[in-house]
Image 1 (cartoon, rainbow, N blue to C red):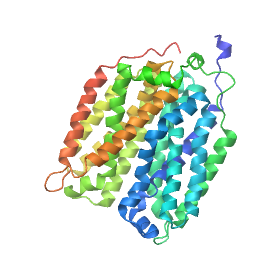
Image 2: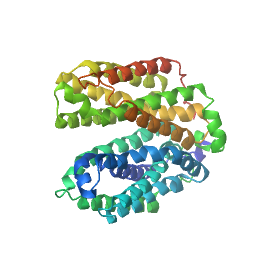
Image 3: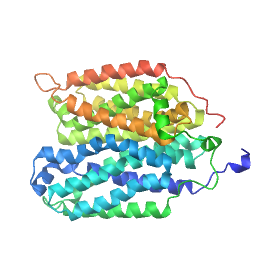
Image 4: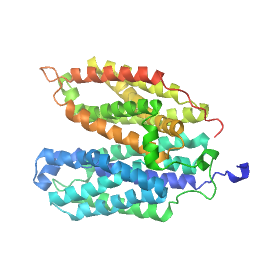
Length: 404
């Protein structure tokens, strides 16, 4: 292919911003009940487990829908694949408001939103490959992942402000309108791909998804990434879910837990920006993945034993930096080591195992504590398997991205 046939378009940033907007909206819809659990039980007239299910259902639904979403994205294109997710979020996000105080309808509509999530998240590397040159690809992937964390943070921060007593109506209406607007903007303005590819790698013919699944799960380096996502996202979801319970025996309240949780997300956002930029600049993946996993392991070790406020904030930040910064680099690394497997196939598989890890760790480590209620045993367990990730990361091979 001649150099003239490879071209980069400024419209790629519009595509990325609209995608980020849809992802932010999706995460707000997911986490919105988590920040107002007590008020939601009163509003719907159900117990706390029922409200927890409204958030947990996203992880459960992701597993069976993942392969369908990847197939649609690979078979058709980014606009159709991710567009399905944006439309489902828009329609069911608004219907959730119309459900009023009926919990059963709210759960059904929440499931509708959850079905859309894999169509969004599995499109991340597809967008980067279709629209961005090699020198910007990990950065684009990193920004897409950052939008996920921004959505979670906004959902946790804004939702309590939208309550009127125990009435969730204003919150549900606000997020319903937001999701509709996001879905409409995506469908109207997002294009599947530019007129000409942004890199030579974007022109390589891909294998069919089912053939791709066979290839990725016989690739030893990809299997290492599977373990990394399973443990990394599983540990992060477990810690963020139980953060108040982890900190309470050490003398901290819910406000402290919220602040430390926010610091973890901030660390993750900064980590994604820094590691993505380094990855694109130096064309290195393995060393950055190893660095992220090592920072995660050390941070977990310190957090397991300390009750010092400064150390909790410092290593909480570094824990978020370590776990979440590995995401964009590992996703791009997965695309490179599994080529010509479609991007959505490898992307979707890793996201799925991360969701499975979250479910298993959240449910499996319940009450894994000392007799006094300290989650020290659970944290030591997470530290131990994080150390295993350091060893596995050493076995990865560096990829050659200079000629793509």
